[in-house]
Length: 230
Image (cartoon, rainbow, N blue to C red):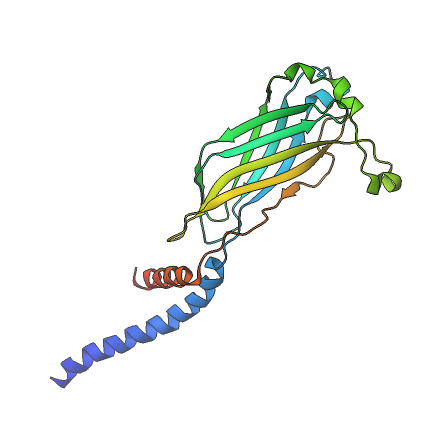
């Protein structure tokens, strides 16, 4: 009889020891992964304006080709892009003040832990002033960065502004997400039409999307329990 009573108590003791010996280390590992998750990173890997390529007969085309990388920087948290990812490229003439616009959109999607997605395409200009886009306008509005021109004798550069607007929601309990707006100035070589840098251009998000500590603890504890008992 005594052996029958001791068996359940022994099982409970072993279970408790297992929970503490496995659960506590797991909590210390998981808490940093779920606390203050990072916004996605956007980087412009390639950018090409065919009309700027003076070695090719492309002066009348208004297309722009790009390769933009969207990176989930969280190793333990997925990302929902709840709204479409809207890309706007703008170029403004320095003399005529004409503004030329290109637009691109990707439907909403899910991005897994530490996963990346590339937006690779070639798009045409939109708007009423498409006819004003030509090599003459581009050449007349060359711009040289003053801080580096004297040291490196750089040829004039053209600047394009890239804006990305979307809404991001972390795959976390109780997270409703926030609107995300990022911008970057892209320097382009006016002779080749290519991105004037060997390094990718990173865009940054001004404010992080924070998550409350209470929600973090609930998720971490539930994750630990599922790992132990499943």
